[in-house]
Amino acid sequence: MSLGRILIAVLILLAVGAGATGWLIMTQRQSQNRIDVAYPEGIAAVVPLGLSAGRSPTLSASTANPLANDPNSVQEGKKLFTSMNCAGCHGYKAKGGMGPDLTDTAWRYGGTPIDVYKSIYEGRPQGMPAWGNALPPQSLWQLVAYLQSLGGTFSASSGDGKQQAAADQGQGAPAGQKQ
Image (cartoon, rainbow, N blue to C red; front, top):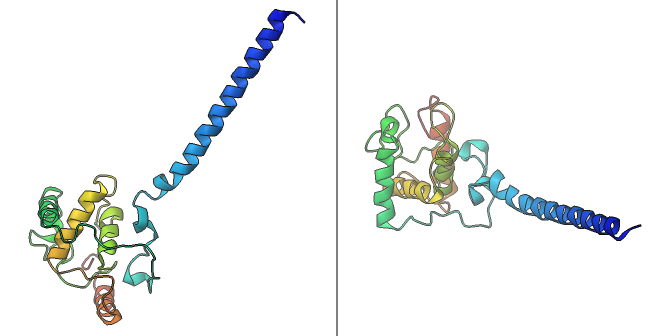
C-alpha cells in the first residue's frame, strides 16, 4: 500500500471515530434532558390528581408555595389573574362566575398550593386552560400566592377532616362548578 492510501484510510478512521464519539455524547445529553422535557413542572408531576382521585401518598419533597409569604408575589399574582383573563371566568374577586369560586375550600382537584399549581399548569376538563406552556413557574406560583391570600386554599398539613369536607363539596357539584 502506498503512503497516500494509508493516510486516506487513517483520515477516514479518524472521521468515523469522531462522528461516533459525537453521537454518543449527544445521546447521553438527550437522555439527561428527557426528564426535564417529560416533566417540565418538576415535583408537581408526581403529585396525584387531588382529592377526587383518592388518598394522596406522602411526598418526601417540599410542595409548599415558595412565594406564599411574599407580598410582592401576591400583587404580581393579582395582576396576572386579571391580565391572563382568569377573572373572566372566576370573577374579579375570584368568587366564581362561569368558573368555580376560588375563595372557598371546595376544590375538586385539591386545594393545597401544589394542587392549585397543577390545576393552573395542566388545566382541567370543561374549561380550565393549561397555562404551563404559556407562563413560567415563577408566575404560576405568584398566581397561587394570590389565591392563597384570598383564603380559599388550604395547607398540605391541614387535617383530613377539612380535606374530606372539601372533597365531599367538590364531588357533588355539577361539572365545571367547583375547581
